Length: 395
Image (cartoon, one colour):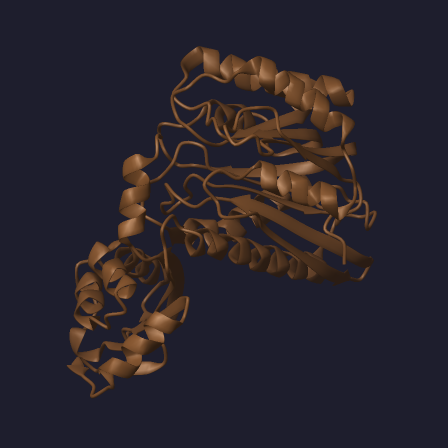
């Protein structure tokens, strides 16, 4: 199964923004046009590329997206906005498109101006290397990373009434990751056909269940962007009915898969923590409690130390805000019942500690026994390495 859907071509090249000399500029091109939708950071302080893209999505005549790493082009005022717009002009001109058909994403250091000569040469080089093979996809996925240990990618084959389609995605992010998106970028591409309004609605729902339910340290960023681009080359008519529902499920699944890779790659992390809160009156309550548990440094450090200190989890739920009956609460960690109906269970603490220590993923399930709604949230543990890294890293 290939990574590149029909109607797309990609490239990733070094243009000198990264001190390491590694790939740092990517192009994603749809020569015959595509539908594009976007979801962005909720931070009041947002980067210039976010302002540009918000004004241009959703749209039905997308052509090109240019992405740079190592410089966020955030908190750079009017000059930064001009630079972001110029990036779209350069990319569009290289591809024979109009400026408004181009989108831009940036990630990296905040508060520094882009070196536009390097950007211009990178766009020219990337345009000359646009390809439809897997190597081109991988080069682009590498070019958008910063402190990531490696690219974050996924692909899925979809069987629809009109035939088969491909759904592929790439993402970046390892730090400054907070709820309702963070320093993360993601692009999901498909050759299925979507109407513009459907694409925007489906992407918003998928992001709500995925990228909006992850954190590393809870710091909301300035540049978060998730794009959905649909070329429509695999099937002529826009998806409807059951096909649209099936696509929505696959899109959400792909976004969850990519989103989980981000806290799993959290700076200095040794564990991915999945928190499921069930038995709530509504999903909003479950989501709020899960977020509160994930934000607790005491919970995160306990998992880092393989300490099944369940009192930290239960107490975090108690101050989260939603009301519940404490005498009906139950807690399970990695399959071990720790706390049932408001009282402690007998459990093998040494065995559970070993389970946490020896497995990358820690599963926490809290059941409030007060309703039928639930929510999941993913975070990383908090380690000495995280503190060291971010004490030394210039942002």
